[in-house]
Image (cartoon, rainbow, N blue to C red; front, side, top):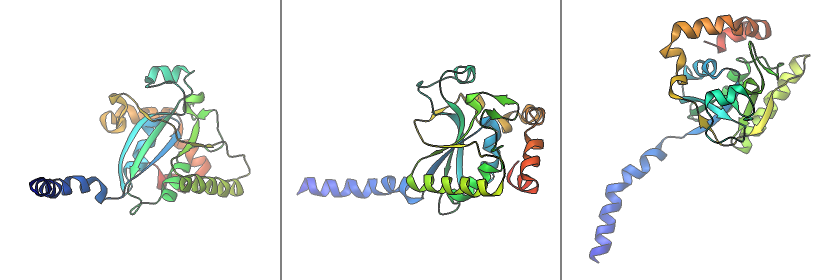
Length: 202
């Protein structure tokens, strides 16, 4: 009897702690869109996005360094992993932001950054994400004459990049803005998306 009372008291004490992380809805989305520095800002500004983390996915090297990935041979792409509340922002909205932050016709890199590590790719976490991503790509294929060169792939293990890459646009705003301008990212996005790019990028 005494053990049952102790167990009940422990459950009452731990209940709020255990329930806390489950109280808010949470989901993860992963996108490769060239330089991961540039993929964080458009998601950070969205209501319902809890965090963005720059990192790597899609390869077969465990815990790769940035230098390993950009040198090539790891199979990884630079990605941004977005943690979001699906009750506030939908995955379809995240996809819309994604497309308007990439050149969907360039599968060999993005803007000035070339090679497989900078390829555009959508990594789906759930079957619902896969279906939504395929549908969104099909819609774009019907809109543009050029072939859409973005693969849609099941997510693998996510490896965070080094700390100095996280929130780079906030830590080093002058360098970030110069890099983004020098890489021709915004000018190309304007060519592809027109006014839609201005609304979705930052």
